Length: 306
Length: 281
Image 1 (cartoon, each protein chain N blue to C red):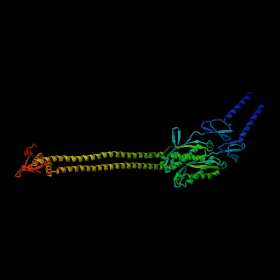
Image 2: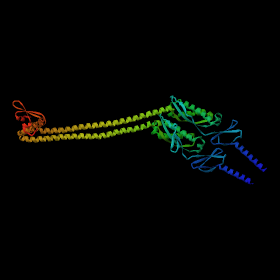
Image 3: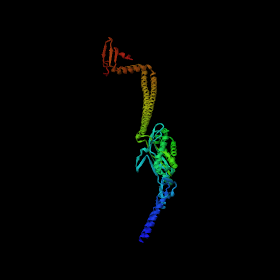
Image 4: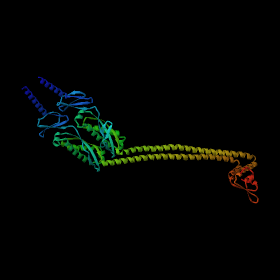
């Protein structure tokens, strides 16, 4: 009797455990696809659910909210630390150059049924599709376009093309964004590219230096010009004043001279000779016999000269 | 006795469960199933659900219905213009006909090697007719050609090629190095050009400033001469007006004035008669 009871309890427990295998939990960002005998029957949302146990029903849980991502040209080793995947990152450009491109594609599941049942490895599919679209768009442009103005267009076009292809495969994926991360020249030529930027700086510098020279030169020349003009004006004025002064003196003397011309003439002569003769080096007096007598002016005029 | 019956019933039911278990099989949403009896195909199932088979005799093989992505190994291709290119492609494919598939290739890994062969020859044939630049930059029409070609040639294997695409077109390492060198020299010449332009413009600015300065100075000098000229003219007029009043007296006065400059430090000869001084004019 006791053995019977124990057997009964064991059977009940086993049955409960068996039924409990059909209990499952779906998180808020997820949905569960329920299969009955392997065939998809319906989808259930977040919460705790139960379905018939194995082998009758089973379920697949898919995260439909979380934004997934794939990295191209690099891998995140741990948050904040990356390694470059050179063979993925280096891409040929339309003008036969090579650029290094790192990109991230963000995507989301829009149809969990297709996402789960139509493709073996949807993540890889997204990555490859994005990579090939990226390659194609880069190849249509020159290296300069990619490094500068066309960056945004590239990421936009890659987004479009990737979405189109994924739609054609019908795998229930929406591409949210294609973000170009680092788009740079390859490591070995980066210095040469930087030098072009330096050259642009140098060019600015040369021009600024020249402008500074010009800006200094013109005002200083203008100063000089002003000086030349002023000097000329001063000279002209001086000449006029000098003329006026000299003529004034002449006219004064003339006035006196007109009053008594003879005596004034004689006085002027004598005064002048008095003034200048002492400064002569030698004065040679000739007598009637034509002998040359040397004498100093002191004797001759009796003035105070040497 | 009762115990014996219980054990017997238990064993019987266990056998029954096992037998039932072996008689049914489930085909998943993502699968095809092929029922083989001693290697002979009895049934091909492409709809998911619960199916019956004969236990111990029938063998069920399952294949995925889903798309596979096959990353084809990098291939070296010689283009029409005799350049070497490394092409990294991938194919998206699925098993479309499990019967043909099991008859011809049987396993996925064998199928991959078939796909490899076909896609590679498709790539090589198509790309060999194109120039390097057209492959890199051109519209990807040739990809649909390759896809079509692969589709046609793999249909017999029960394989459907959805798409063949190129992930990467690369240069062999030595050519890549050459490209880097060229990029470098290209940038260097651009940099040199920019610097030269800068110097040219700077020189232009300087020369223009110099020119302006020279002109300004010349204008000033010419203006200065004019001003001096008017000054001198005025002076001359003043002199002429004043001295014109008595030319004789001017000459006399001016002569006396000039002695002040002539006589100092010179040797003077004077006759005996000192009145000769009166004659010095």
